[in-house]
Amino acid sequence: SNRLMLARLFARPANVLVLDEPTNDLDLETLELLEDRLVEYNGTVLLVSHDRDFVDQVATSVLAFEAPGVVREYVGGYEDWLRQGGGFEHYGNTADTPAPAPAPTAEKASGGKPAAARKKLSYKLQRELDQLPAHIESLEQALAGLQQQIAEPDFYRGDADEIQRTLKAMDARQQELEQAMARWEELEAAR
Image (cartoon, rainbow, N blue to C red; front, side, top):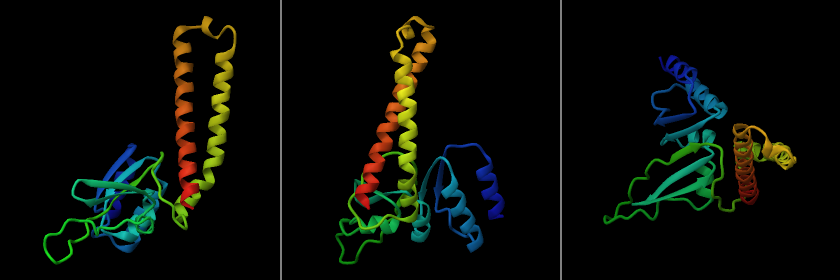
């Protein structure tokens, strides 16, 4: 059954899922279960779907194939993509009939994404924006602690492996902080 398939999928350890038209042949209850699991999922989900409502519910980023060889990334789901000026009108057509709209590829992920100004964030993106200040503060505190540790006079007299681990940890926290700040600025600008 579809529910058993979903249970098996989410029971396996993974940090990336690739889903091709995952809503096909799902009843409403199973579809809602899938949406809930994907929203709670703590990794990256790359999915292709023609179900625009589903994309709106789970996606934090849309990769739209807007013309041959042209892929653009937008913050949010399908409706967010439209509000940011997304569309398939630039698809090259030689015939008079419009080309069918390709399925947007959606991504549920953390990390910085380019954004265009728009009027309102989706619930998911607003929730992410609300949580970012506390996350940024936590990263700043962790970074300050590592910097203080490195500034100690006898830091470089210690174990070489420990020195390398601490320096790598500091670099990683710095990168995470920069990404979180960029994401915060992007979501603020998108409001």
